[in-house]
Length: 377
Image (cartoon, rainbow, N blue to C red; front, side, top):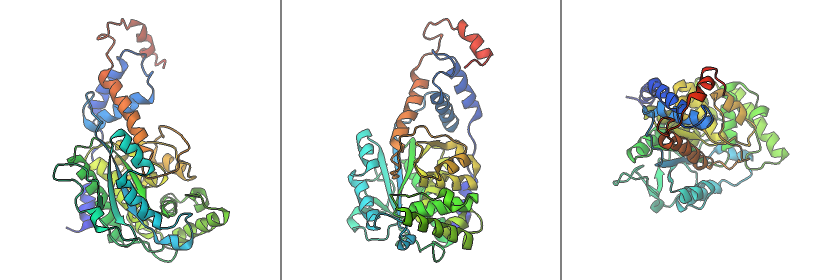
């Protein structure tokens, strides 16, 4: 079976949420010791978790991981990034040392990181690599998983960034990562990235998917000046209009990156293996949009963390039909919004699991009947 046939076979296995479990969870929420709906979106989160797991209550999301896909992008040759390409290499290594933004939070909270090299351009020391996404002890490795396809993509300003087969391979790597996390007992995961130039690639993918003009989706990334921003907009516009046609996979191959493709696969994997997944910022949410194009049911498994500072974020969020949990002005990437969102999801599940019902708490809830009947909340 070809890689592409295998990919579409896996995508076809995604099923929707368990409606019976969600109904039971909603009924329990309405009779917990509080006014109905008073925990707001925390209640919605708990109900959605029930739909994913098939359990109205008693869910556990404390085993957590952030999957970080690392790759370089040939388009940085055009001067569209404020940071040098060497930063991709440095930060990929620093994730394993727990020196970065997301990895410092992961270290504090005891969250695993699954760091994967899908196409870092510069050489990573061999001793930092592992070939396995899960150890013999069924744990997430602390080394960098080697799934390098090539030394970065080609320059999308001059030619297609990848072949279709390369894009598919990267997507399958993302699906593989989710299976590995499930095998390691992970109950909730997020998706981050590292790749200098990937706000250019993600902007191009979003423009190609939506038909929205480049100037409305391209932002300053890591801090481009006005001249750099204008050049970045023109490159995205020219590439999308010149050769970015076809189905979502073809568009990914033409103007995307290995990191984005692997992230798309990971979002699909959340649906395939029925694990709740957290979206980080702009690159992450664009990847989620592509996954939705391939199977709309994957959105059922997604939770949006923070509102990204990037200009195209709102367009992508509207396309998904989700809403971010918080807005802290974040724009780091890496998956840095995920640990914060994990704690919000934990709070939602804890309230469902540990709060007593009115009857269990010996509270006469007759006064709430009119509120329920008239939907006064």
